[in-house]
Amino acid sequence: MNVHRIHRVAKLTGLSRDVIRVWERRFGLLKPTRGANRYRNYSDEDVALLRYLKEQLDAGASIGDLARVGREELMNRVRAATPRATIVDNTFNRLLRELLSALEPLDRVTFETAQLQSCRLKRHSMGSYCRSRCRLGSCGTMVMSTLPSNIT
Image (cartoon, rainbow, N blue to C red):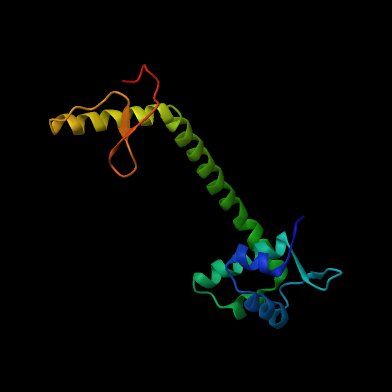
């Protein structure tokens, strides 16, 4: 189980540190421990609860109504909502892997070759001669390159 200080919790949840402290004091939903340095230490469970509360508030619920339900019931709701997030995460990761494997053949040489061919077509259409060892520079001008001799 990870322990997070309040500034990290604020970043993870999108809530301000002041809001987190007020909710802790006013509603008693959070019970952070205190380190030797007296800083608040929040658990992963606290972070998950705060994320859930923020989602509910964004959807139109009131913090007072949510707090009346109690921490235990809210944590049950958080646990019930978690598998959906896991499914979305797994789908995202699968799609990302598919995308990366599709892009793998498009390596640097393929990209530079495409740039060179584009440059040649551009110069040819303008009636200019393009040297075989040039490529299109970032500013759109021709620059010398050290491409392999088989790419001409």
